[in-house]
Length: 307
Image (cartoon, rainbow, N blue to C red):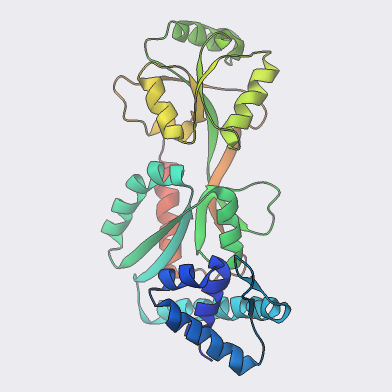
């Protein structure tokens, strides 16, 4: 057996299909099947139950795959360590990031990082935060730029900045004056002012959707929801177009490029702020390329005018 065969088998396990794994590995399905059979013959046991869809590991296969994951992870760490010894300011890093964060951050981060470190290749993997946490712990990505849930104690987390929930209103809304008066009078926004304002919200399952409903309940509101979307960027654009109000993260407000610009107001309530940072596996070897990216992200995002 060799590391290439082990990578093939692990890809079959993760994809749950020989055809999808072959496509991802850029080899033919017959060639991949042949490599799998060869390895199974060497170890003397089938690794997958071929009668299930998706493919599931056998009892022996499950234990063998767990060992393979550890072997490949340790080999990857060793290669990164050797790379650091022999090559300075070069390398490859695999960054995990939620799709909306990639839109917000990568145009700000990557061009300046590439200018400073042209020989470090940054590959990105976009996925929701929960999936990214799983990828970090499985060693599928080097690290993730994300919000880390407080109940996830397995990952190492380097906080960079705190982000608050903001209310976004169309620039010509007559409620802007009421919102400013409320903040000046009370020190915070009385959200009940917007009880009759139509809202654009993310669909159920998103963090901001739950926060919105919690805030509505706390303020005894039942506002009209005129649009639901999976994309907070669309909600933001619709507010700028005067279609309604929305709740979004502070960074979206800071980095907006709208003209005229929506008006933003900090929202007070439970779970209305969180820490954004870099998360990685506790046993991960931190290469010089990763350290360079960590420092660059921290420097650039810390300069954002938050609050």
